[in-house]
Structures are given as C-alpha cells and as structure tokens.
Image 1 (tube, rainbow, N blue to C red):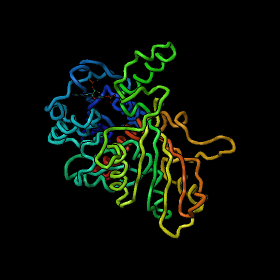
Image 2 (tube, rainbow, N blue to C red):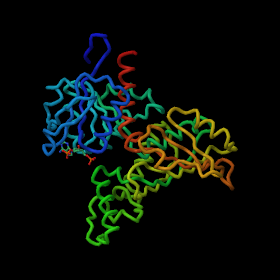
Image 3 (cartoon, rainbow, N blue to C red):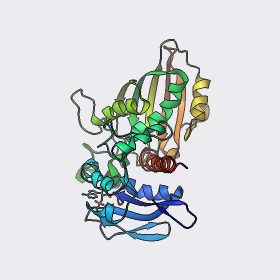
Length: 352
Ligand code: A2P
C-alpha cells in the first residue's frame, strides 16, 4: 500500500489477463468506481506484451506474465482472469510478492482455506484471505443466482433450488463472442456450412446448446456442479440445487429461470418476496407482465445490477416460488464482483 499526499491509501494493481473479455471490463469498472490505484500493471501472454492499454487517460504497456513481475512492480492487489491453469501456476508468485490475489477462475474456489465471496452476500468471509492470500470470485451464474437467493433465504429459509440458465457466449471469453458474430455474418451470406466451430461443441448461431463445460460422473456438467457447490459454500448451507446450464446465442448477460422451494410449512406471499428482493443491495425488480416488463439481457448489459422479475407462486405447492433473473455476467458475474471484493478488502484491512 502506498500513500499519496492527501494520505489516501492507493494500491499497485496487476490485472492478469488484461487483454481478455473480463480483463478489459475490469479496467472499465475500476475507472467507474474510481478505484484507488497508484500504479497499474496489465499482464498477458507474450502474444500481447507491448500492446497499449488506456486507463484513466493514460497509456499503460502490457507486460508478459512472469514469476517475478509482481515483486518487481510491488503489486498490492492482483486480479487473475486468464484461466485456471495460469492461476494455478502464478497466483503463488503474486502472494509471495506481497499481493492479495482476487481470482476469477474456478481453480481455488472450493479450497476450504480460500474464501469464495459475493460482497453483498458473505462479505465477512473475506477475513479468511489471510490463510492463503487468495480470495476467489465465484462462477458468474452462481453470483447472480445467490444475489437473489440470499434475501429469500433470510425471509423464509430455502430448502431447494431448481435452475435453468440461458448463458451468453461471452462466458467463453472473446473467442466465444467472435464465433457468434462470425456465424451470424456467415448465416446471412449463406456461408454457414463453412463456418468454424471451435469455441463451442456445436454451431451457436440459431441454436441453443444444453452443455456448458465437461461431463461429470453424475451426468451433470462441471458448470452445473459449480452452481451446486459454490451456492452451498457462499450461503454456508446445504441447500439442494439442481442446475441445467444452456448456452444461447446472446452476446452478453446470462438469464436464469429459478424455482425456489422453501422450508415445509411456508406459505409464500409474493408481495413479501418482491419486497425482500427490492430491498437487497444491487438487486432490482422489474415485474409487470401486463406491460411486458421483465428482466432481459438487453436491459442488464453494461450495468452492475441483477434484475429479477416474473415472480409467481407455484400453483400446486404453497412453499414454492418461480422467478427470472438476468445480469451482465462479465460485470456482475466477474469484473464488478472482483472490484467490489477488492474495495471491501481495502475497507476491512485498512479499517476504513
Ligand atoms: P493474450 O491476449 O495475450 O492471449 P479471454 O477470457 O477473453 O479468452 O482472455 C484470456 C486472457 O488470458 C487474455 O488476456 C490472454 O492474453 C490471457 N492469457 C492466456 N494465456 C496466457 C498465458 N499463458 N500467460 C498470460 N496470460 C494469458
């Protein structure tokens, strides 16, 4: 931590994966939040080393990620967003170099000594960072879901969650977005037969793919099991979760159709559910079906809010509610959550 003349703490901040979809968004979010930066250190692979990045009106040169780069640049906070294998290999060098690591990959998430944090939901878990020097950012689909589950769990107590996702291609990074755009162009020019299929298992334009990440022994996918395990870790509760994760041809913002079963004996009052969601930090309810007003990706994209709507009580079981939830997963599900973790960490560590 460095201090400027006004004695306000400022930090040397590294972004690993600075040229990627989440890395680029991190810069935008840090600027929007007026993040207290002393020196910015953008890091990527040798392919991008030397490229320039604009941040707060200044140009910064991308450096190649290396073991020594954190110590050499006296990095205080290191955001990692370059894939699990990079975090596995390099996070320790950042920690040894004196930084707190905020990791956006799945690599450390289920490590019992690493806190898994959504600051609006379980900020107190950040204190565990001292064990390893690492704080994990949850999976994007999990973040927007727990943001709406937490107030409902406080209201009635949740027993079970059934969720189907409609996930944007940006979840697969820039390559995912580029593949959808290229296939859109190829479809309109009748060249789809020759279009590349690399980022996803199948053509994504004009299609939906009911598989995100690899098969697990129980026939759920890895993405689906992340939603199970991470939800339980964040909420500190063995809530039953069944997820079906689906890729859809949307550029940005994940949508989720969620069914929540509360404890036995609960009689859901939709007005109470709506009020609890409305009051929760960074959650907004849009729910006017008569006027076709509900959350959609075109509403949430480029915002830091999780939108909830289509709230309705089950027609058979009094303790069940259904709703629809949408958030910009590059922001709420990644960059913004990471920045909010860092700001909370600064507040806690510096007793602000
Ligand atoms: P680069 O652009 O140099 O390949 P996305 O999630 O959009 O696919 O972005 C992945 C990010 O991770 C990019 O910034 C990419 O940098 C970075 N990255 C990928 N492989 C490495 C590596 N071996 N070392 C450092 N950064 C890497």
